Structure formats: structure tokens, C-alpha cells
Length: 370
Ligand SMILES: NC(=O)c1ccc[n+]([C@@H]2O[C@H](COP(=O)([O-])OP(=O)(O)OC[C@H]3O[C@@H](n4cnc5c(N)ncnc54)[C@H](OP(=O)(O)O)[C@@H]3O)[C@@H](O)[C@H]2O)c1
Image 1 (spheres, protein in one colour):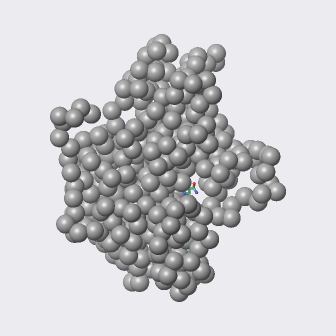
Image 2 (tube, rainbow, N blue to C red):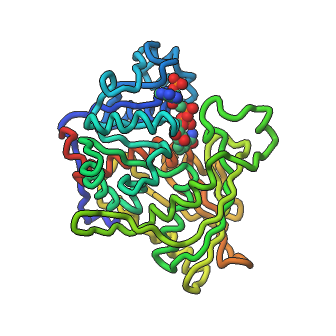
């Protein structure tokens, strides 16, 4: 964006209290660290399972992040995931899909705007599946969701931690050249499996060529994210894209950062240079908003032969940047390349918080006090 363009600035009159559901887990800790230092939000409730409720946060949680231990909340009391005991106007959910399916609607019904990492509601037709740089207009589903479900609040989801690194380059290719088919193989970090996750004996010096329930998510979510919002008289819907994705998901001995090897077949013929240009010139839809969690560079295209790498590139821009590289012709489809991003930041906590910032900035959360 050029410096003369004005930015749309949301600025709450006082910090907004938020609840973290699943606050003791891998993603929950990331939420807390971000929220504890956020200019718009502060953590009002840290909620987790009955195993943790009633304990001090430091007793319930194996803190695994750098910086201030427990983000300064060691003494906070963990509360149960119930709206009676843990209601805030904005709720971030790092629950597993099973509990999320039961618990998130209770908060939405009670009037909270729930920003969820779980897969439980991602593919429901009235629930936004959001990457704010790509499809912020999908937030318009919120009104229909409230009317249909009788909720005062709403649920907004972010994609699976592998989908986000896929959907971003696919969105650019679809917009510029049209997409026909995609083959993707993921090399997913251990932290993607939660804590304690995969046993060291299973993953050390090894590759596990199976992640339960993962491939179907990676094969379907991009089509919804890139789908077109259609407004009828009484109904708003998403018409999903029709390209086909074939995914193989593997777990590798990397702590943070999912790496994807992607091959694409395009609808129109183009050159490698034009594809690089398209990646380099993409203008994210967040750029007119001054969002605290927006990375300065949403997408980087790296020229080096051996990049991106999780160790060198996953932490870029506090884990919110997606790195592409190794673009080359594919002898079977048209082009192939590598995409990499931080699974628990860009793929989870950072993504959800960015969704909330975007929804507030677009005026979509009228019930949240300014
Ligand atoms: N890790 C990633 O890279 C990643 C990326 C994107 C999305 N996600 C999604 O984010 C969610 C959390 O993943 P994670 O990796 O953080 O998992 P995790 O480390 O296993 O943490 C799970 C959290 O959920 C709580 N919990 C479990 N069962 C519960 C129940 N019945 N009622 C209330 N709370 C319950 C746990 O509390 P206790 O400590 O009390 O058991 C813990 O706080 C999942 O839906 C996952 O698919 C993860």
C-alpha cells in the first residue's frame, strides 16, 4: 500500500475482555501470549477441561513458549468452559473438535462472538471459514447464521493449519489463471498434534505418512475459502470453487512450521515469470485496515534454491507470514512450488485473532462494546 492511502482504524475505547477456551493446550498458550500483549484485548477467563478447572494456570498447563512464563498469568484460576462461568463478548476457541462441537454453540447462543480453531463447524454453510486477506466478505454470513440458529452471537472459523498455507497461493493462481487441479504433500510439524502429541519414539528420525482426518480437510477447505459470496433475497451463501485437490499429509520431526509441496494445473497457459509476478504483487484485502496482527508482508516469495525452510522461515513476522519458493515447471501438471507457514500462529492462534480484528474493523460485531 502506498503511504498516502489512509487506513481504516478500529480503536476500542477500552480493552475488550476475551475468553480463551482450551487455554492450557498448545494453541491456547499461543492465544494467551498474543492476547496478553494485545492493544485491543485482555484475557478475562482462561478455560479448559474439568481436569484443569479450579487449578491455577501454572498447575494446569505445561507452558512451552519462550518469553514470560505463563504470559504472566501463572496465578490465574482456570475455569470450566461454560458460558455461565466464562462469558466474554469475544471468545477464542482452541478446543478439540469434539468438545468444540458441544461448547462453542453455548457461547454463541449466549451472545459471544466465537473465533474457533476447531474443525467442528468449518464446513457448515452459514459459518465463515476465513482468511481475512482473501475472503473477508464471507463475514456477511454472520447475520444469516444468527437468524437461522437464533443465536445472539456467532461462530467464525479459521482453516486447518495446513489449508492456510495451501489456500493462499491457490487463491492467487485461481484469480489470475484459473485452477483445474492441485496435488499437495504436506510435511507437518509435531506441534500440530497438540501436547504431548506424538511420542518421541515414533517421530524421532522418522516420517509418519498418516494424520487422522487431515487429508479430507485439506482437500475440501480451499474450495469453500475461495468460494464466491452470493446474496439472494433472504439468503446469503458461498458457492465453492470446483477445482480438485488431492492431498497426502505426513508428520515429520520438525517442532513448528508446516511445509507443503504443491503442484498445480492451471486453466490458462502462462509463464513461470507471470506466476512469480502474481505471487509478488498480490494485495491482501486486509491492507486498508490497520490490524495489530497483520504481518507487514503477508506473503514472501523466496528466490534461494533451498528456501523456505521451517527452521529459517516459520517464525518470520511473528509466525504470520507465508513463505513461497522453489517455483518450477511440473512435467505432469503445469507448475510446482513449496509453501511454508507457522502452524500454531498463522495456522491457529494468530489466524483467529486476526479474524476477530478484521470482524471488529468491518463493523461485523455490533454486540461488542466499543
Ligand atoms: N496444534 C496446531 O498446530 C493446530 C493448528 C490449527 C488448529 N488446531 C486445532 O486447535 C484445537 C486445539 O489444538 P491443540 O493442538 O492446542 O490441542 P491440545 O494441546 O491437546 O489442547 C487441547 C485443549 O482443549 C482442552 N480440552 C480437551 N478436552 C476438553 C473438554 N472435554 N472440555 C473442555 N476443554 C477440553 C484441553 O484442556 P486440559 O488441559 O484441561 O485437558 C486443552 O486446553 C484443535 O481443534 C486442533 O485441531 C491445532
